[in-house]
Image (cartoon, rainbow, N blue to C red; front, top):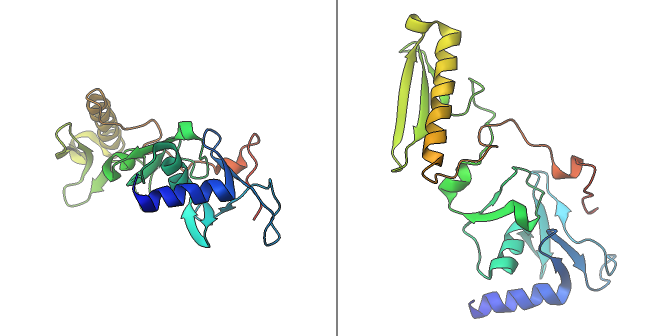
Length: 196
């Protein structure tokens, strides 16, 4: 751990009680209207928790992984896809490409299926995936040959099989990859988010 990182680590522990397993911070002292023992951090509009250290905002999950592992992560993946669920068991330090393998279905997706797109010029549905060697692959299913619904279904099933195959080689796609939006962790009854 570098000197600046060691100083940050000590500063966090001076200001806050850190429960890495639960993914929470509690204040060690009363300051600025905030009470000792109160949960620290706020829920941002993008769904992530944020904590203030030395009057600077940090994403809580990044601070927790730093406190747990002793190094700043390049990228942190919320395994279950819930951005405010900062339990240690739900956080993993990953590469950007591995984090993308836990990505939910994007709002711009027109087919409703991750990795499947309609190609009007070809009149086909194409399945896309990254193989075990990191190379982008695709396979087309013609609407003329199969009809629209069957071509889309075949492309979806083929991609699912390819993802399953590369996962056997350790690709790291999770069960939430391509699924619909996750509920906010605060919406779950067993968890209460700190009040701002």
